[in-house]
Length: 133
Image (cartoon, rainbow, N blue to C red; front, top):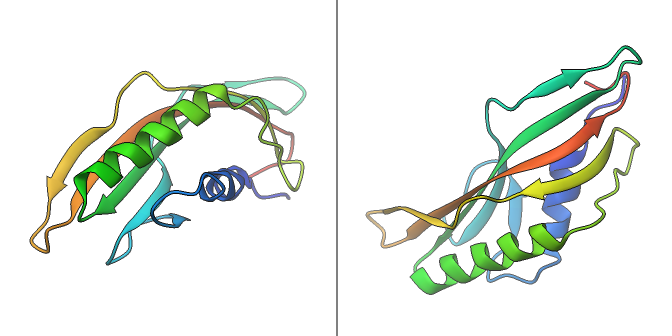
């Protein structure tokens, strides 16, 4: 079995955009950070050949003491995802189609330490190859 490497390839791409903080797969860190996470849900269409088309719900969350850094980072991510034409798998687990970004960065909260947290929700349209878990 092959594991889906989409989130890690996407995370690497996000880090290539040169934002104010490094991105990681999973939760935000204690200081300034960007996270990439898969969200529940998403439509899956299974095919007889074992492949499946997946609407993969992806959330980008940013954390900074500078509100403008949050907004700028998510806007850069937003516009780059809309223009993204290729995001190849490193292990052949998926075929990238496109991103759908139908929202703007949203303010979530300002925590007790003075960090602003913003989020951008997207949908990645990918085909997951046969035998991938």
